[in-house]
Image 1 (cartoon, helix red, strand yellow):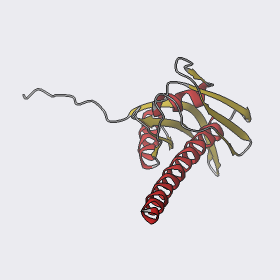
Image 2 (cartoon, rainbow, N blue to C red):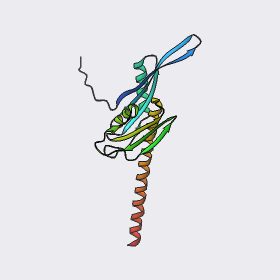
Image 3 (spheres, helix red, strand yellow):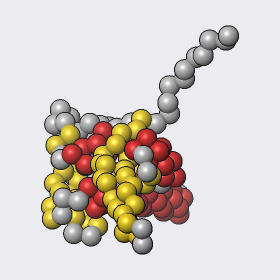
Image 4 (cartoon, rainbow, N blue to C red):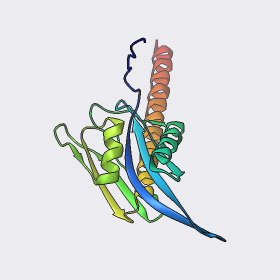
Amino acid sequence: MPRRTFEPKEYEESVINIDRVTKVVKGGKKMKFRVLVVVGNKKGKVGIGIGKAVEIPQAIQKGVVAAKRNLVTVTLKGTTLPFSTKTRTGAGWVFLQPAINGTGIVAGGVVRQIMEKVGVQDVLTKSLGSSNAISLATATMDGLRDIERMSQMRDLRRREYAAAESRGSEAHV
């Protein structure tokens, strides 16, 4: 029998939250589990997903598949985020702010797990309002998307400025 060689996974995954949910039907209650999962490669890619199933392992697997479909790429500035942002989803607010080297991840449970999977090592965060795990995870992901949009805008403006500078220097020659 050939030996199996295990290759390292591209993404690390962790379960943020497990809830038991019920659906009331004519014959009684149908029990299921809802699992919130985060996956990331610790190099700037992260995603969250929700999976529901009758058994927890199946729900986790569905959540991982959903998270891999919803990956976000974040441009990091060293070990921290390039910009600060404040986002809201539902009643949950999340504030993300870059920090100096050595600060660590100053965050609560849900936001901390997402920041670890992104690969951020130094960040200051604050979550306000609702403590619902899904709301906070979604608000954190929205904040990371906002940061990526700001990074893209910054790069676009730098290219436009460099192009205008080169046209301006040619005009003076």
